[in-house]
Image (cartoon, rainbow, N blue to C red; front, side, top):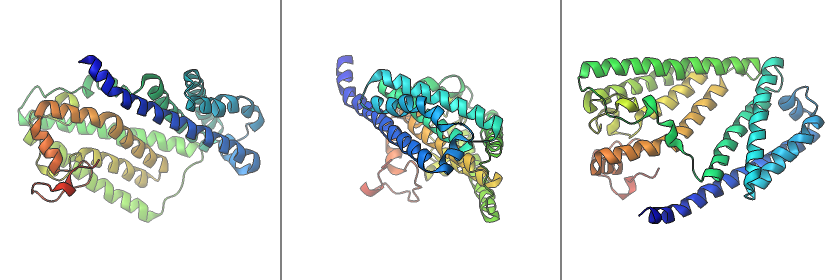
Length: 323
């Protein structure tokens, strides 16, 4: 049985490794294009390197970043370690430099994104997959709630909302905004966008609270994975879309970016959404299938993952989930 599973998973592993190689190929091309732009367009060097001598960095960065990424794309595993390690090191250095000097803020942002991409692609190539199940520990491990008393569930839900919204929608965005200002990357949004951000924040927060209460009232659980619902929740916002809380979260994050005038906060919200969708959602759906079986499969056929379904009738083939 284990041998059969291994044989079945081999094509998926090869595909994931291929995806990692493609990332490093694109990174090598992007790095080469950036160095070419740095040599030919003075503004590129100023925005991404500040007062740092480009020649001094090029001597080390071209072999380790550009050529290293190209070799990683050719499936040389040792090059994966070199390119990824160097990218992470440069990202840390650029963050420190940009914060200390207020120069090269764009370079710091680009290297942070490159470091994140290199880490994910590197793990894909070395391990053959992203072991995202390692993230599901403590309060993020899937366990049913220990109580079904509604009043207690509502209190716990309220506490969770306050803590998570406080951290992810206030503390982290404020920190990101502070770096954005320090790195001279701030952009003054038109007042209309600020108003739109306030409206989006209000609507998405209502949806988030509505979703959380639905889990407590109809599922005897809380939004936290370690206190998840005992019953499959298909009422409230879950009657229209399978992940209303995730939708609410990403819209809240983007709304906060508009509200405080931070494009980096908007990027943070989008990246967080993509990582959750890619790394966490598959585990969540596997857990739901294991606990609710055909009940969840039928629900997933009737209600889409991200696009609202406003018909309560049994779905026709064109309404089957395509995510």
